[in-house]
Image 1 (cartoon, rainbow, N blue to C red):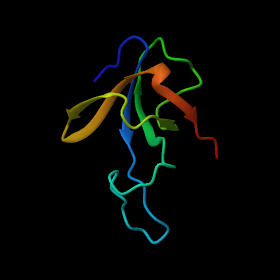
Image 2 (cartoon, rainbow, N blue to C red):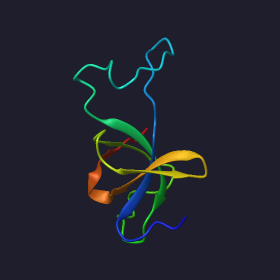
Image 3 (cartoon, rainbow, N blue to C red):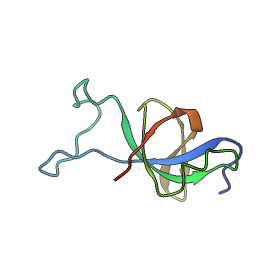
Image 4 (tube, rainbow, N blue to C red):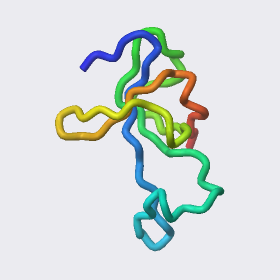
Amino acid sequence: MKVLNDNVLVDKINDESRGGIVLPNEVKSERFDFQKVRIVGVGPDVNPGIAVGDLCLMSPMKGQECNIGGRDLFLCKEEEIEAKIVE
């Protein structure tokens, strides 16, 4: 798949508790305002500071869901990426 314009293709990462238990979105408290995502594709007009493989934060309700190769991914605009996680 070739991502176009200023679009970004992301894979949402499930949050886990410290004990390794996956927490569904319905159970999380209000303090979980952002969704952690991994960038899996970027369009040619995206800021070069965002690259495939980066971990980022975005609002959980952003992006258009699409199933590609059996994976549920999300296509969103670059401006919907709120922050890049730098380790």
